[in-house]
Amino acid sequence: MQRLTREDYPALQRFYRGAGYRGRPGADERSLALREDGAIRAALRLSPLDNGWWLRGFWVAPACRGQGLGSRLLAALPAHLDGRACYCFAYPEAQRFYQAGGFRPLTVEALPPGLAQRLRRYHVKTPELVPMLIP
Image (cartoon, rainbow, N blue to C red; front, side):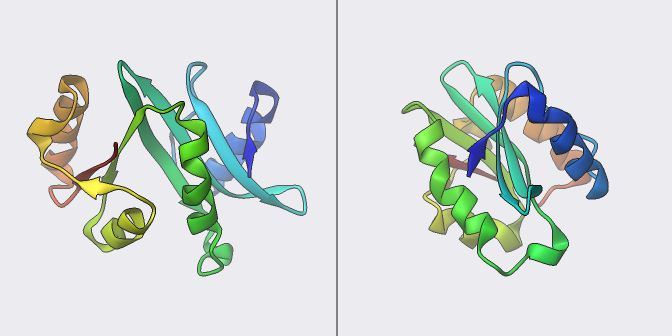
């Protein structure tokens, strides 16, 4: 597992673009990745919040799914949180995966206000998203 630097961002953007993901790493974010043969095979981004992080852009290359890369990346996550909380929005079918990695479900009302507003906007198109937290 590698914490990416700005020099790695073009490779991360190519990885995400290849997955059809339009997100881009921000200057204030932390990006983590697993590489095989020099190529990014799994990645995630951590966007800073006032008292924590928002996990987003968690993606494993389709050809690499089922090999434990996502679990390895999630297991390495706490070492990069600086002791701060980490939130994510999970699809119901991924909820057990996140729970195995230490996340627990919570209510929208328990989210930081800005993140709660964002989830409410997301719920317009994707009402099944579940807010989760690593305390």
